[in-house]
Each structure stands twice: as C-alpha cells, then as structure tokens.
Amino acid sequence: MIPRYSRPEMVAIWEPQTRFRIWFEIEAHAADAMAELGVIPKASARAIWEKAGNVTFDVARIDEIERVTKHDVIAFLTHLAEFIGEDARFVHQGMTSSDVLDTTLAVQLARASDILIADVEALLAALKKRAFEHKMTPTIGRSHGIHAEPVTFGLKLAQAYAEFSRCRARLAAARKEIATCAISGAVGTFANVDPRVEAHVAQKMGLEVEPVSTQVIPRDRHAMFFATLGVVASSVERLAIEIRHLQRTEVYEAEEFFSEGQKGSSAMPHKRNPVLTENLTGLARLVRGMALPAMENVALWHERDISHSSVERMIGPDATVTLDFALARLTGVIDRLVVYPENMQKNLDRLGGLVHSQRVMLALTQKGVSREDAYRLVQRNAMPVWRGEGDFLTLLKADPEVKAALSDAELEEKFDLAYHLKHVETIFARVFGAG
View 1 (cartoon, helix red, strand yellow):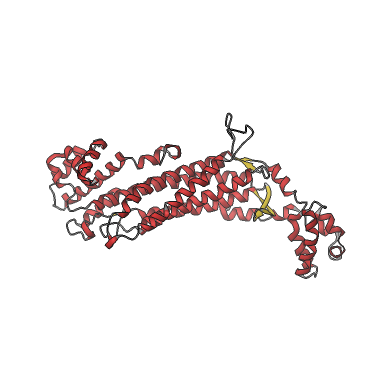
View 2 (view 1 turned 180 degrees about the vertical axis):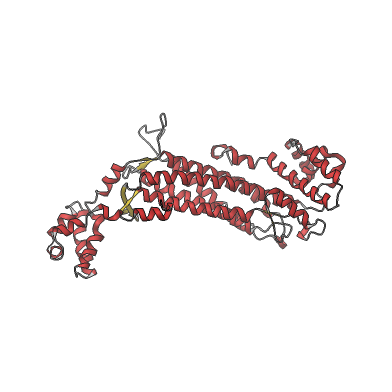
C-alpha cells in the first residue's frame, strides 16, 4: 500500500487509530453485554465508555508496550488500562485475542466492501452514459485480433456494463459472507463468555454471528472475499486491455484523454501512451496475486493458529486499497475516453467489404448451394482482397459461379451495414432494462 495508488477514504479504514478504535468498541460493547448479564458491574461497563470512549489512542505508546509483551492485543489492553484505571480488570473478560482481531477484520472488510461497491456503481454510471452515447456508432468486431463482423462501440461498453453489474453482485455477496462476528473465547466453546455477548457485539458492529468458530473465524470466508476481489480486478484488466488495443496507432479508434502539458515519453515528444490502462493491468495482477495466499490461509494447524495473521495484515489493506484505486481510475478513463467514430468507420471499410462474407455465404446456401461450395466460393473471392487485389463485392459480381446463384442486386443487399446492427436495441434492453 503506497500513496501513489491509494485513496484516503479506503486508507483510513486500515490506519492504526481506526483499528484500535474498533478494538475498543468491541471490548466496550462486550462489557455492556456482560454487565447486563451480571458478569461485571454496570458501573464498570459505563466507566469503560466514559474514560476511553473519546480518547485518541497513543499508537507509539502501544508499540512501545508491544516491544516488551510481544503481543499486540495485550499491548493495547495495557494502554487502555492507563485510561480506564481499576475498572480495566473487567475488560476482555472470557475473550481471546482472535475474538477482537477477527471481528475487527470483519468490520474493516465490510467497510472496504461498501467503498468498493460504490466504486463499481460509479463505474457503471460512466459505462452506461458512454454506451448510450455510442449505441449506434459502428465499429469492427474482432476475433483473434482479426476483423470479424460489425458491432457498435456502444455494444462494447454495454458488455462491460453487464460484466461490472455481475461484479457488483459478487462484491455484495462477498461482503455478506465476510461480515461475521466471533466472541466465543478460547477454542470457540463460549466456556468463559456467554453467546449473548457475541450476539450483542455483532448487532452493535453491524455483523452477523459466526455460527461456529474454532476460536478463529473460518478462513474459507476470507478466501472467497479475496478471490472475489481478484475476479473484479480481472474485469478491470479486461476492459483496460481493450482500451489499450483501441489506442494502438494502427487502430486508433479510441484513446485515453491526453491533458494539456502531459508528456508521453522522456525521449520522444510525439508519444501519447495508454499509461492509465497499462497501470490498471499491473494493478490487477497485484490484486489477483493476493487471492492465493488467502486460500492458503484456510488450513490452520488443529483448526486454530495465527499463520494467517501476517498474510491478512498485508493483503487486507493492499488488496482493498489497490482495487479501490483501480476502479476509480478506470471510471476516470471511461468518463474522459476520446472516441474516434471516423476511424472506426475507416477500419470497418479497410478490408473492402470482407466483413460481409458470412452473409454472402448464407445467401448462397439459401439459393441451393451446398455449405461447402458456398464457403469455397466466398473464400476464393476473399483471399485476393487480403492481398490488395480488388474489392470484395466487385470480385463476387465477376465470379460466374456466384452470379449463377445471386444477382448483382442481391449481392449488394448483403453489404448493408445496418443488417448487423438490427438487434442492438434488444441487447441494450437486456443489459440496461426496457425504456
């Protein structure tokens, strides 16, 4: 997590002061529940809030204590006692460190999810706006990087919209799965802490109760969460890669906005490079790379250890901060993407009508020509066009076997661009809804 690829709101979730504040709230809410159950004095539960509820924790002091204790939660509790005094003996009653750490991580990941979902919604709004702007802007559809048949640029963006709609749903599901609270004590048996304490803390922290904890919240939840982030990052890269291709000089159908004073190369003043989308490709690799260690965290020794802890202290902030930045950057790219419809049309026409080859082949089959012969006839006339030896329609009209089946007028009709775009409205209605 470095400032270059970070945004303040997401970073704030992972700052030490935020983490210690969540730790305190978990401990204080647990004390409230214990007081109601008669486990600790109600006056002591009130004192915990009154004496430490509004303090700013001294991070340096906690670090100083931890250098001696070699235990972060104990260091925090020791520092907390410096504010609370005698009533601090009722803090952390029957609880274990994982109760605090795992529940805190659940709160942080849930909050991070809310930001990521909002990021995706902003991206969806940008994609929808640009999709409708270019709903009927014709462009070439490519397969294997080679001209295939006509589409519209709006359809390209509609596809991305549909994909990120799925991303939004996946993030919502991942948030629900990760947002669980465990206040079950050592080995998760509730021997020294009543399950009603857990239920109270969960309700106060906006979480669900973990049905069964081993002391540690099961890490399959976290594996699914980070895997979901990896899938979203892959969708980011997919769209970024397409924009990078479109900006290639030989294609030049769209490009990232190039601002006044921007420089593309330290050596070549003419350069306008797709630096933002290249950056997104790199960031996506990082987020995906954090999914594997999350999966490796699932298996713990005898159901409970802390081998997962060091991993999550890194991938929790790094994955969420990086994906937050990437989604925001992609939204900016789409918002300001410069589109060149005239170049799209020029590329459509580049192969002299070859993009209509399937229509001609199908028309021949409708006239009684076998599919094998129809394919042969069309391909025979298409290959010279690749070599720059003529126009496809002209060559077809001059082919006696083709002319025997199709008139000039029938051939010309097969070169109508609008034919390929007749179901754009249907696709848009599927993606964006009717009306």
